[in-house]
Length: 65
Image (tube, rainbow, N blue to C red; front, side):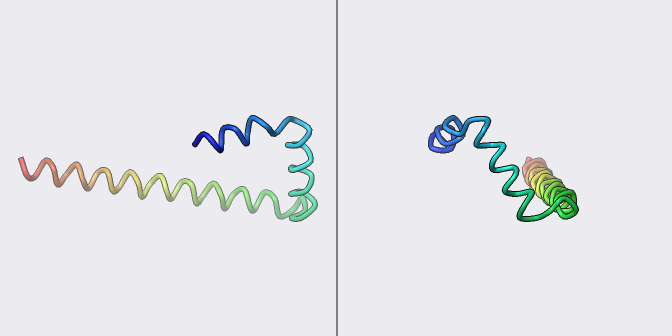
């Protein structure tokens, strides 16, 4: 985690702008919203699966009591 923090700290605002422009050039303006929608859906599914696993574990602990 420290390495990630150091890396993000070294990247300044101009570097983020350049990275954003490079992504825009690679994927284009029409594909970018689709990519972000897919990424958001993936994160949502991951959170749901994590929550379901926690709920299952809590039920098992309660049943053992």
